[in-house]
Amino acid sequence: MDEALRKQGEAVRRRVLGDDYVDRATKGADAFAAPLQDLLNEYCWGMAWTDDGLDLKQRSLLNLGMLAASNRMHEFGLHFRGAIRNGLTDRELQAALVQIAVYCGVPAGVEAFRVARAVRAEMAGEGPA
Image (cartoon, rainbow, N blue to C red):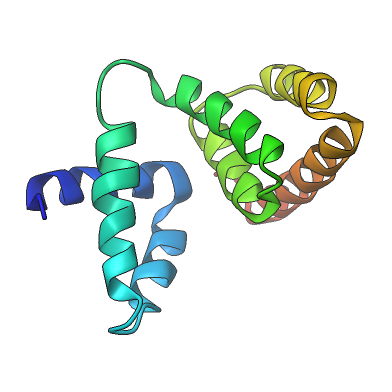
């Protein structure tokens, strides 16, 4: 394991998803699940999110499209929240979700908007993200 990359990945994961989410995920992992959290921090967040080829907003947009296309709506909701935290505007998010509906199919678009509305409502109740 590349400890420096794992730490960089965890820092980006915290920036995008928030400390509360990451703390719940890592503290809730027992000995059986702990290796997955390390993998997520090093590989997913470290390797895929820390290079300078794309900024965080671009990565968020890509993730939304891929997660909607693969019908991973729980993860879509997490990354929709992350997209807002990464600075995507309502207009940018609307445009992305309409494009998801066109290219992934209307049912995927309907579900993406449903999840997005729930996340936005939840975030509005929490105050600023």
